[in-house]
Amino acid sequence: MANPSLLILPGDGIGPEVMQEVRRVITWFSEKRGLAFDITEDLVGGAAYDAHGTPLHDDTMAKALDVDAVLLGAVGGPKYDNLDFSVKPERGLLRLRKEMDLFSNLRPAQCFDALADFSSLKTELVSGLDIMIVRELTSGVYFGEPRGIFEEGNERVGINTQRYTESEIDRVARSAFELARRRSGKVCSMEKANVMESGILWREVVQKVHDEDYPDVELSHMYADNGAMQLVRAPKQFDVILTDNLFGDILSDCAAMLTGSLGMLPSASLGAPNADGRPKALYEPVHGSAPDITGQGKANPIACILSFAMALRYSFDQGDEATRLETAIEKVLADGARTADLMGEAGGTPISTTQMSDAILSA
Ligand code: ATP
Ligand code: MG
Image (tube, rainbow, N blue to C red; front, side, top):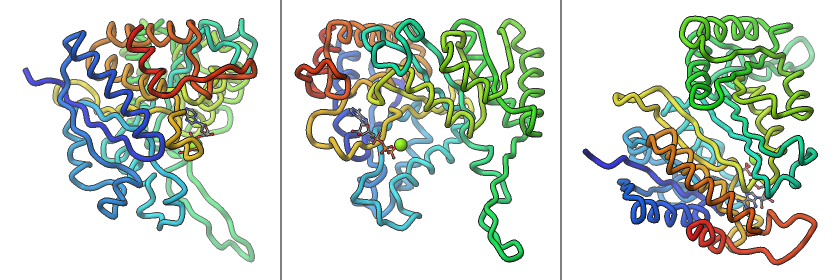
């Protein structure tokens, strides 16, 4: 059987710096654990623009559609700020999401105990925290028509439309329930069915998918505003949170602050299943290209390494190996390894990007 295939797109800024460390991790897994991957590497974002005049070449797009998983670093940077909108680095990422039809965005908010004092909340509220936000990524108010700024009488009006079809809700709900089955078996769905029609339909469809196909999963519904409050009041009550594009954008940033640094947060975006039943998938750290620290060896590689751990778990059926990697990260943090972003007020001498992955590999 062919090895699983992986397309690596390091991108811009600290993207290539953290991806270099991920490549070492992948090599470790192939040498020590016998996990071989067919790896292709290509350009995305500003790097692709510099080489081809487009933030995503058609050949790269074709490769992305062909592989088992895509691993992306980050795109963008000040150098590209004045480019025309149609060739901005971010457009490369948007095209990948669109053409791979990545409708389900998974963002874990997991608190490593060694970093619990980094949280915006008290340690006891976040210690052991492990939640997963499933955000609908390809529809809703960011894409609904009509949209635009129009003339109305003697003034202008800005319009966006929140729009969800039953099938769009159905498929993202299924991905949340599938995920819950691999975790604690609990989903909380968040919308505003009290004031929005799309929210009423959302609640109805999620309940129906549950009753018909996932009765074993515990389902609750919550208004998103209450959800935001509960998330900062008592986050450990949640396991999987299922929500739409707009609320998911806000709630996942909110959940991110429960865990501390941006340099720690991975994400996965999943699409429809391929012929082999596995979803199309793109894995990337939540952070951006971080131009302020690019080229200084300061970037924390953990978010990108944890994104590879998610790939092991969700695309390659290697949950145990993913846990092995996560456990190593937990251990080095407990031992006190800190890149600059994890230093906090206590001070001390930070280690470099490469030293952090050295520590993870030896653990
Ligand atoms: P984007 O628009 O691409 O999301 P952004 O400006 O919102 O980018 P980032 O590029 O993620 O945000 O950077 C935000 C801040 O967090 C910066 O000060 C950056 O240095 C820091 N940061 C981001 N990622 C890391 C990392 N992996 N390690 C250390 N610091 C990081
Ligand atoms: Mg940002």
